[in-house]
Amino acid sequence: MRLRDMPEDVELRKRERLRVLCQKLKIPVVEARLRLVVTDKNGREVSYLERFSHSYTRNFYNRLTGCTFLRESPPASGFGDGVLTVKQTSGALAGANTLARERLEDRNYGYRQYASQTVSSILLGTDNTAESFEDYKIGILIPDGSGAGQMEYQTSSFTEGWDVGSRYYWSLWERDIDNLSGGSITVYEIALVFRPYSAIYITVIRDVIAGGQVVTNGAQLTVQYEFRLTYP
Amino acid sequence: MDSVAETGCGGWGQPPDSDYKELKELCRELELPLLEHFWNLEVVDLRTGEVVDQYRQRCCSWTRNMYNGTMCQHGGICATDQTTFDDDHLNYKRTDGSLYGSIAYALRRIFSYLSLRGDDEYGILVGTDDAAESFEDYTLIAKVGQGVGAGQLYYYKTETSLLSWSAGARKFTCTYRRFMNNYSGGNIVVREIAMVGYWPASYYVLDARDVLVSPVTVQHYHQLRTQYEMESVVFPS
Image 1 (cartoon, rainbow over the protein chains, first blue to last red):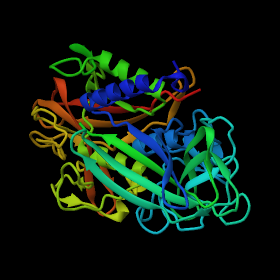
Image 2 (cartoon, rainbow over the protein chains, first blue to last red; image 1 turned 180 degrees about the horizontal axis):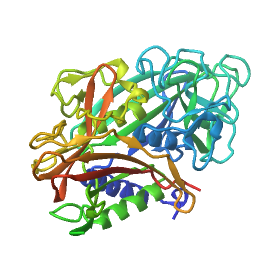
Image 3 (tube, rainbow over the protein chains, first blue to last red; image 1 turned 135 degrees about the horizontal axis):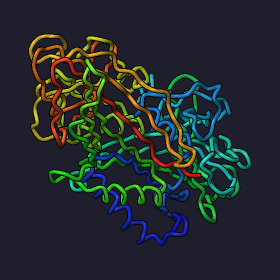
């Protein structure tokens, strides 16, 4: 059974079993959760969606493999099976062990980004083309602004912590994005873009929201990605 | 050849291979990446070239250091806490026991296992203690030091093979290898093995320490050939 056909309760049971095995076998597996909260112009919550992110890209797999192996392939090797490179949002390639050289929790590195910036961090789009393992950028980006079809991206925020009961470390990335366009906007896709350093931007997740998430004029969409790693 | 041993973590109360198979299947279904690694050991008589012992064991003991590194790299965090090495603190414990945390510690790109000949600070290292593995391990318990004196091994450099990709199995394999010669005049019984990484400025961090299910005896004038084999998850097609 593929994930997209899996009932939610079945998936939950499987994930619980996964965590038990990971703890027992001491193998780290990083999970990601996605949350979407819409609040109207009066600050009332009008929509809430939470689910597991199902769409790590080849970039994420290659980074995990490259960082652990301490190996990578030269960009000239291409992007695809058998090659440890990452594909930047520009389409240019880089080695998969291209890692953070800068302050991941500071300024606009890692998953953090300033207001109005749409080159990294949490980004929204309107393309509902099915997620693909080969995705390296958002399909149709909703640009920053207050004009028609635009949304205002705020500075992303970050928190982290340890869950004593379940023994996992978590990092939570959040970004508020406001619709001041004068009309409704339906968000169909969300991407998480990592900036290790300089002008390198790597999409590690692209999630498509079935049916879309409507954000009416004056409303705010809060997007959260939470990474969890269960410890032995 | 005296013996040939091949084992997963099925012995001595360690998890059976069926658990690994189940975990791999769950990761495939849930579309989550998974990594595995193995130790391969071989003892060769340097006078005759004969392989006198062979051994393969699943590596079961990534340490807290390795977990903290994984969380930092993929959760997008820096390990900046230098207060305590335990739950709720992301940092690294160096092989000398000191803690390290820094914004610069996301620099795994310049982290290396490729130790040079004669260097017993990092790369693949072996020891003689069989104290049970612990998630909190940060050093070998009784490291076999570099040299040709009693109880010492002569370490060659840690090398790595080319990265390989299996189109059929759809996964990467990467192997690190290190040879060690025994010129000590006596037997050395290896009971523990570790992978230690190096950061510029002499920071050594132990990523994995395993106790061998069966100790490996390296006689005088024999060579111990060690391999650390890392396998990626099966990539989606």
